Image 1 (cartoon, one colour):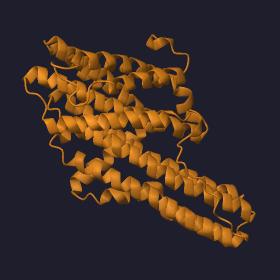
Image 2 (cartoon, rainbow, N blue to C red; image 1 turned 90 degrees about the vertical axis):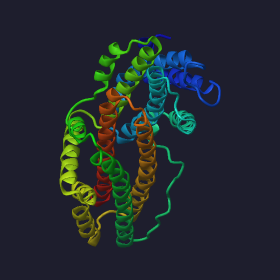
Image 3 (spheres, rainbow, N blue to C red; image 1 turned 45 degrees about the vertical axis):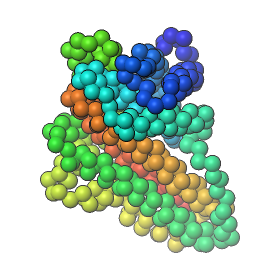
Length: 372
């Protein structure tokens, strides 16, 4: 089916998964290189890139939906897709590197990449089984808060809020600090700051392909550039509209501040300040002193807020897999690729920080529901 003929995101997603699974049918072991399946993987990558590009705009109704559950669902799909696509792009760039240098990738690196790609494809398939409208499915159902009085229920809610907000903040700081350390310690600091304030460099990678005079390498690099552009667009989509621009700007300011001071612990303080957890905790403590809602309503709010903790743990874990894929991509020593890889890390860091912010806001909304 032509990439532009899919009626819906779901129709495109089914064919997208079929193409990813076709990659799994390639022989075990090294799947790139002149002596095996280079033409096959390039052809599939081109098809995947075309379908993926169409999926982005077909998902707009989900990305801008008023229901946070639906936004959550499409975000999960995009993160898992981006991880698989990025690892596929790294496979393609290995073809380019080998064609240009004549040196095949180290066996250990190739084995790691193969395993990671197969795992990512499997994860994307499991994730996309669930409709976007179901949000992030965690397989757990909470119905454990059974406080009998409003005061007791309010106290339980305060504890649930503290645990959930603390978990979200901790996960953001844990992964975010790792990404930040990698960025601020980069020898290409000028590139880091540039990519924190600009759009993707994937277009530049595509433009540089004309300089490659070897047909197989040129084909692989062209497919890789298309995939990288899709990955970047999917990460940008996690922060809708102007929010994404503001997120990237703020992350750029944070990176410069950490670079100048040489203190990575500043990242945690910046996250805590952005989320305003101290103020929210004090507000909930005041509200808990004279709860006006029925115990059952407060109990349900407590149970709901606990699901946010579990959901964010899963979401952060998926983002960790994407960061791992980005770092594997850094093993490809081709200069045009570096700015794009750095741009992806900056976008992922912004997506992580502001995903945490969104979940904190949803926790605060729970408090408003039972206070009214």
